[in-house]
Image: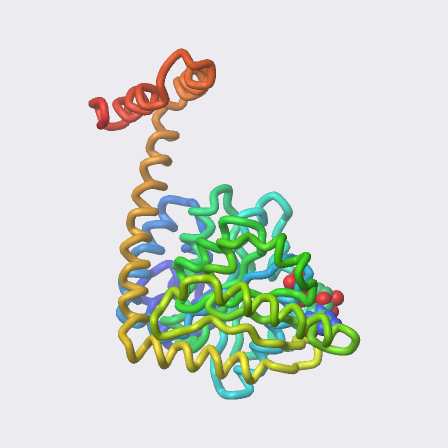
Length: 333
Ligand code: GDP
């Protein structure tokens, strides 16, 4: 494959549509690049491919480190490719630029899937802001859809805002938990439980089966107290053992049932439309912040204004207006 021709977005788009993996990888590299020329090429590419997107089941997967996300992805992904589906696995991990890329970076627990011709695994892009990392993953998701992937699984670590970012780009959000029971329930932020369309208690094998059953009952009770996100779906709790391959079929059945119910109600489409609109505003916010930081005068002024605001010498509103005026040439508000 000629690298030169892959610099042409139209050529790249044609190859991605045919499912060419090298072209897909190249497209994602463009999307992830911070170089202005790459960004322009990436946007040209995405614009051409937009009509080819939207056909995948978009799944989010979250869980604390060690709960079994990689093991689950291997089991679930190979089950799906065995059923004839093409599966893409992406990740959102804003800490990866600090930690050197943990999530999906180590594929030893996904040996089969990593070698599967019908699977495509891409670790989290590096990035300093969650917004930047999330955007790149969203755009990578669109490219994998255009390349004909049927299921896109987007993973994140269960440690904060990245769950919300992932929930904002998928159709269905899976929360993976371990059989820790009540103690663990305390530690899980209520907000994360509220995001879940399906809770999976993993490691329901061997000695852990009774604890997993107890935990599942507690999570069910907790979910029952929450207002469902859709009138057409009640979040459920399933038991699984990613290690032993138990419960994988049932999880896929639940995902399919969810997609069917919400799809028929028109909610998948309306949800995606709302997500795209919200994404535009996220981009506007990110863009404004970038312009602000790129403005020399403003960036020189920021530390002083921050100090004044902290010391109570000026109001946050006035400080913000001064900075915005430098970017827009007038005071805001
Ligand atoms: P991640 O950090 O969430 O990606 O978790 P990993 O997939 O790396 O798994 C963490 C540890 O839990 C590993 O030692 C796995 O072998 C183990 N593990 C994962 N799934 C299961 C399971 O279903 N049952 C048991 N008993 N152990 C599991």
